[in-house]
Image (tube, rainbow, N blue to C red):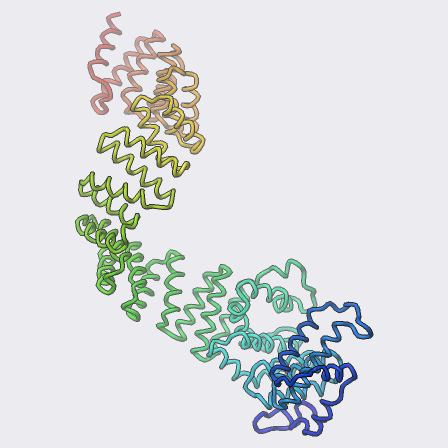
Length: 632
């Protein structure tokens, strides 16, 4: 029998003419008793394809069993399944001698069983390709057997013949077999030389890497590289460690991958770069992804998918101007795509170009007048431009189209507030609060309502109810708690106010104002030592807080009668704020307590000078203290 690469068939240059019908018949009849018995077990008259399917089922059973399965009689179950598979594949060929898949599968099964030699096995593959020269998997199986037999040059030649089929598969978005072809050819070429080299790491390798991310998933690619090609590249003779199995390929490998893809024809090069870009993004290599998308754009300019990816990557990288340029290109290619107008408007807003954002959104509302989101975005832009009447018109249209969406209502409330329509603002905020579902967002709305009730309606009860609702909805809303604590203090609810500040001090332990407010309430409740502790925490958070130093000084002066500590604290307050009239006046009082009349007079004179700039006290109070000081 001739070798696998002995003659030149015009339609398939490397293959010989194969077996004669007589040789094929004789070979098919050459089987052992077990296989004859299996054939005899086919009592019905199945079609060739049914026999092929039954053979596949038995072969899968064979593969699923462990090698040491206990035998039944003289033959193990695993071997029985393999023999059944062979019998069904043979039956399929008897029924349909030109069934190419049956040749391939019979060759693989017989090779596995060790029933036939390499030359005959390879000849079966040749027969399959001759009957069906347009199926890539036949070439892959043929090449795989050649590689197992260490005939790498022949395996590479077979894969080379399959190149048009692989490229056709890529163009038809049938990437899995094309990827397998590319991997197999790359590995075969490496095996030809024993290690990778510049000469033999051809573009098939790079194409396989890029396509694998789609076929096998973003996690499958780095794992395949680490356990297979990646390890062999580092050290062909080394074993694969557990660490290597989970280590993704390094950036230099990926850079080399995208660099060699430019050898492909333009449409395929663009597709491959796009696939590699997606793979790069999936493992966090955004810089490389951007480079790959740019190369894809070079090979096939003005592709919408490519430009969208480039725009998104540029925006994520903070390159707003670049993202905007890509988006503007997209708008020229697809002027009626609403999502592009929304993207452009967002980017224009990011660059503070509100007028252009407005122009884009107005154009989009003309294209899609029933799209409520467009009117909502337009209303926000107009509000940012302080064109509140026009913003209200846009938001009302959005509200009509979107059936009272809570976010639209909240924005309408803000615009009404700016238009001094407090009742309308409160009404819209209340509707938004009722319709919203996000507790954190609803908490912010309730807090805003509380502020409106308190500051503009002077309705302390409604304000307190709204702020308490805000805290129930979001217990971490420190701003609402701060507002409620201030309200409780101002309405005389000292104990509840203190409870709020104690809670806030645990939520925001480094906030000097919270400790300061807590200290002030404790001072007003005559809990002076606790007040000093709270003030000390405020100083620890903000060592330049003049008000806290002054208040601590007043406690030492008026409650504890310690003039020396009081004067030291008033001095610190004046260092922090040299124009602090009240601290200068209190310093004079502390010197009076210490009997230091001259120093007291200087401090009062300082306060008298400061009161002109910072009138925290009545000027008469200071002059009265001076007159009293010298009259004594």
